[in-house]
Length: 214
Length: 346
Picture 1: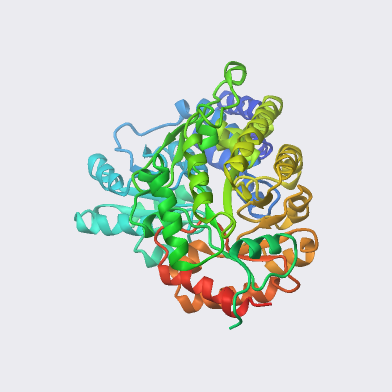
Picture 2 (picture 1 turned 90 degrees about the vertical axis):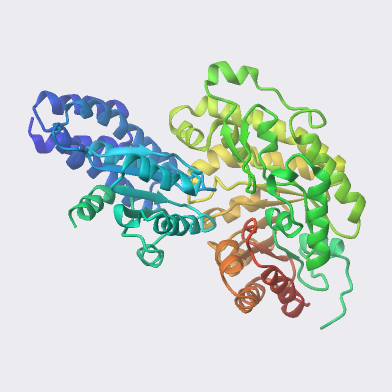
């Protein structure tokens, strides 16, 4: 079977939320010698991008997105051990979390899947994370990237406070800050002094790569 | 300004009956805001009805809006059924560990809680009794009961419950069934304690979360049963769903609620023309943007627009779009109340 067709099937299974299908095509990809990372990024992640679009358009809702994420997760589990990693290179460390007072972590979990698949070392602090914990984690893990999200207008200001804390602790120039979440915007990211803003999970990998290469 | 002729109780009840009161009632949904105004922390009131009641009375006397609220939306109904809460020092609690993990093991173990004995429910009921004693008959006392779908999410975990719609619809429906029954039992105790009206709310069933089709299958039949049962207890009911509910306003009205409360994602003029002849409309001053971040002048302006859109003919309550954050400046709540008095006179 053609590589293109397998990638297309992987994407389709994610779009349809078909977990069994996604697993089957992930195994097929390995059998055919397709690069595992490529299968994730050009197959599964492409599907997830389409899912985001369908959600934007109001054709998909949260249950559909979750089902797609399940399918993606299941296939990533199969593909991950086959990702070729450069054992000598130190992976980029990313600290991730949803800020204090906010327990909406569906988007953050999608970002984690994307980054995991792309070979980043992800330190997931979870949801409702006390603001000082972000600073502690950045220091402890020597993180290159700090990713934060907020899904409520009432919790958004927490991200600004974290950036202020980073400055106060002399850590700001050691880490790049990326934010996301439904009520946020590029303007908001700029206004609080973040380095980047991600519209949705599918953008995360590219944005972080760009930040690191700067 | 015309002299106020009605008590807050008469005013709100008149609006709920789709008639014109002396002026539009104004009900900012204040919980943590009142708690902070009174100088307490959220965690203190979680186990102390005296402090909570004090905060409500303190704030309403100072700001003069039209409704007192019980200790609402702290997932007490779900906690009483086995979900474990995380209670931060000075913020609203959330569910840490949901009661239902494995359907086959946990569903048969679920009990309908005893409202006077189990969990935090007696504390909340005590608060309602005290509020009623303090202001009953003059200011309406709002008692809160979760919507059945929200209760389900707090028993199962929101993400899992949403996924169950796709993966395990049958056991999910059994859980919604149990949730609905338990809420009707609890509502009876809330009414007995003295609530004049019941707030049924659900942040997890708007069009931002689930499709209209899923709403019709997993929410509406149970919600209608819950609301109708509460109405038969002789109180008013208002249904609040945060978020984009533009495609389901009619279905919300079909539940039999006296009023539906919406946030800023719904245009009040549209809601009024669509269902205003059947239900009272409540809304929709933005708590996170206008009340929290703008000036009293901006608040006044937004209230004026809301009143222009929806007060005509009666059946409108000027309310916040959702619960008011603790950090909202007092001047902004004062501006909201003033706007109702200035622009909301019939």
